[in-house]
Image (cartoon, rainbow, N blue to C red; front, side, top):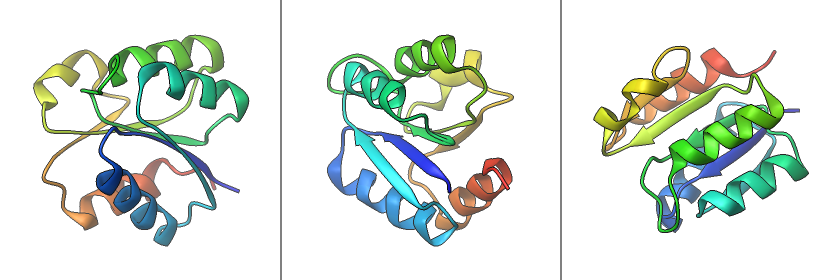
Length: 116
């Protein structure tokens, strides 16, 4: 099973990321639109992969990922953002993809980090 946590405050983008990763092998999903909600969901059910935007309505994706990593360690993250310059401290081992996103980029990145 591959559970994915999508941290994204745009409903349409979040659903689209779910469809793409579902077609690539993800089996279950949680969608969070705020920093606090993302942390709560990750602690309630450990994700195998996190897809994360940087800018959120409340808080930031970077802070959410930092808090999740402190508690759970070792979850691969794919940042999907319109502000990739803010991801400099989070690039490798994490993946940073820039919006607008090409479907094949996300699917390839997801398959590369998805657990076997």
